[in-house]
Length: 393
Image (cartoon, rainbow, N blue to C red; front, side, top):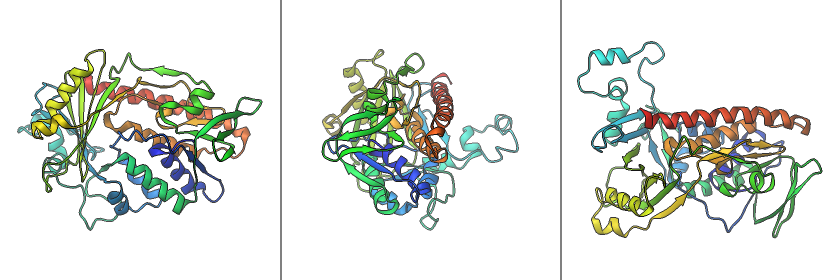
């Protein structure tokens, strides 16, 4: 595995938890490349992923500055008024598999939203309550939930767990070259201080650099800019103004002029960012909008003094994700936009499919690659549809 962070260490952990006794897993990451550390939201699938790796949920919550996420709250998406909102809760409506509850709700509306009428989760979230009690066992739930987390701390936590508990070999070194077999598959990677590292299968978790899948194998990107316009973001870490300030247990997504703002509550801070279309706003205008948003919850002098990080991305994904004996996972496979935590969910799904279809011999590599590429092209297309629906509806 080339590259650490959330993608690299999730892949290492998922594969090692199943095959650690039979497969030698090495992860090499550069000590010089910083983790992006913006994606701080997950899907409820993360509970199963962590549980299968033998992670203690209490340790995870404490060491990753993590909090509970019960869904997403969309403010101002229909009218532009941030006081107007709707929820996407993680718990299915009561009776969802037995009866269509929409006509019943429409016939007896008393001002409640659909989410509030069929699930307790909207009211729990509006009161800043948790989805479980302190006595509820690890990964069990009263209502369905995922996590918000500090992505940098999560990568470090996963690294310790994979090395200490799952036997993953960790090499801190810079990949200086990639070496091929005569058939074009990857034989090894060269490192600055650790020599040549040979393997049967290579997982590219090198982020946007795409060291293996892009720079070496030249797998092209498929642009999705025509469907999803957002290609820039401003991110900021926001302090709480008082010690006992409530921690929001949903991702708050607020519609803005040229995109939307995410607001994620962690135990020690908030992670806030404005993702927008560079074709519909200047960076200066986006900064003005973001600081105006921050002033709603912070003193003006605090909001204006916070340091913003500028990010840009080209929304799209690889044409093929598994090429020869190399499979791309995480941002090396692609990135579209951070709505609904789909990036980390795709990492989980990718790691699980590599684990389940891990080729027993080289002759099976092409079969695994074909299945993987078909499955993940379908998934990327459906996620693009899913994101478009937020805007269309």
